[in-house]
Structure formats: structure tokens, C-alpha cells
Length: 432
Image (cartoon, rainbow, N blue to C red):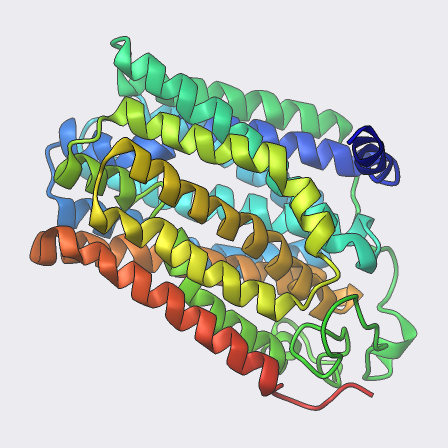
């Protein structure tokens, strides 16, 4: 046991200081912003008095509104650098959270939620993912993204748990929003002073400039399978996003990933409202469930992904999709605390597998000169898949009631089946 712990710790020594700064930024941003997002649906329902359907629509529209900005953010990250995108997202989050604390008109709250969906987390995620791909060698990207998940969920442990206890103790939603704003502002100042630009300097490498990309086969899986080789397409010298949109393997990955991301998107949007409405689960209990999720990831994410990173990545994505579907959709079967703990554990295992493995596949597919754009499109898919969750489920809960969450189970297993198909059929030209 001691030898294993020493081995895990030794594996951490190879990362640069700027990677660990990015790691810390992920923790601090999630710790701050999760004072708001797990409880935003409850705030709109209980304080503003709007319907479940409208709660879902507002949360979904906020995510869809961010899509054009993610595209621009990815392009900006490639052309001007990752640092500016990260700082903009933090400044916007601080201002929007602070404003949310003092306005009460429904249209203003909706506008702020939509603006945060456009300028906050999606742009932060795009820039952060590109920084990881810049700093970490290809054979360690799955492990590095796993570490970023540790940071993310350490933040998620702190934020919802403290906020849930504060609400149980009589705190107002406005006080939570102010706390989130202060946290984002402090992080902005820290990164303004300490974060360096990581975008590769100079022109694209010679292979890309000549119209190609050098093949590199990461560990695990057949090199003809999607995501198992870095030569995703013959890259012509197209401008903007044209080259990305001609990568058929990447587009196939994005399309299938929408299904597990639909499952994932319920965790901090409709799930707390669903549990409260149909099972009577209070906000404080949900906050503890989210903290349980974060604690599991904090403890198990790094050793799990180190153990799995040499396995077939698409097979892992298939298993993860099924776990995400059962882990959320299983709430349709009951709201007893023991059952919620079981399905949250299944969800967490799926999350620990899917998030770093899928990001590693994207990093492998992305040529050096287009990393920001690939990560911008991937963030677009990530947020878009999650946006469908509250947009459709608010309506489904109103019409189907408790049975509505069975849709999530179906989506998870459909994603699992399609990832298996992608293992067998590799779109686009085979790598040399």
C-alpha cells in the first residue's frame, strides 16, 4: 500500500508549475461558482416563483447562448493566447454573480444567467483544456485531465457543502451570489499576476504547414479506431474552423458524446429540482450528495485514470455512458437516501472515466496549431449536450412526472451502444 502511494506521488513530479497553477485555478473557480449553480433552479422556483418548465428553459437557453462565444473563445485562444480567454471568463463571472445578488426582476435574472452561460464556465473550460494540452506530453494527457477533474471536484466538495449548510442556517441566496463573485474576482487577480501564456510560439509545425499531421498512437486500443491515433485527417491549410469541421472522426466523437453529456447535464440543473419535487429531498441533503460525488473524485480519480489510461478509450467511454445514464436516471426508482448514495456512486464512476478519457481523445486528435479551436468545439459539444438536459427535462417533468427521468437511462445506454459502433467503424481515412 505504501509503495503504491509513493508510486502515485512520484507520478505527480513531472508536471510544470504552470500546470499546477491551472489546477489551482480550476479548484478555486468551481469552489466559487458552485455556490450558485446547484441552487440556481431552486432560487428561480422558490424566490422568483417560476414554473419547472420555465426553470428548465432558462437554464438550457443560458447554455445555448454560450455556444457562439465558445467558438470565438477557441479561435481567440489559438490566435491570441489562452491567458486572455481565462481572464475574461473570470472577470465576467465576478461581475455577473455580483449583479445577480442585487437584481430581482425576472427578465434581468434571465439575462444574467444567459450571460454567465456565454462568458463564464464554457470559456474558462476551453482555455483550461488548451493549457493542459500545451503543457503535458500526449502519453500523459488522460492522467493530466484526470488531475484536473480532481481539482474540479475538490471545488465542488467545498462549494455546495458550504452553501447548503449556509442555506440550512438561514442564509439568503443573495449572500451566496456575493460570495461567488468575490471568489472569482480574487482568482482573476491571482492569474493576472502569475499565469503565463502557454500557446505554442511561432508558425504551425512543418507537417501541418505542408498539409498533414504526424501520426502518434497513444496507449490503448487499435490504432485504426477513433481517438486511438493522432493523425485524424489530412489537414489542409484552411482558416478558422474549416479544418476542424473537416475532421470526420472528431465530428463523430462529438455527435455520440452528446448522449452521455445529456445525462451529465442534469446533475446541477434539474436533478435538485426533481429530487425536491418528486421525492421531497431538501436542498441541504442534495448539497451533501454533490459533496459526496466530489469527495469520491478527489480520492479515486487520479489512481483510477492512471490504472485505465492504457485501456481502449472508446470502450471506456461506452461503459461511462451507461453509468452516467443509470447514475442520474436511477432517481426515477426512488428517493431513499441509501439509493441516492448508490446511484451517485455509479454516476461518479462514470464521470471519472468519461471526462478525462474523452478530453484525452480530443487532445490526441487536435494538431498543435488548432488546439484552441478543437477545445472550443469540444466545449461547445460539452455545454450543448448539457444544455439539452434542462431544456427538455423541465417540460418532461411537467408532463411525465416521476417517470421523466427514465429518458436519461435510455440516453445513457444509447450512447454506450454508439461508442461500441465507433470502435468498429472509424470514419475518415485510416492513419498511415
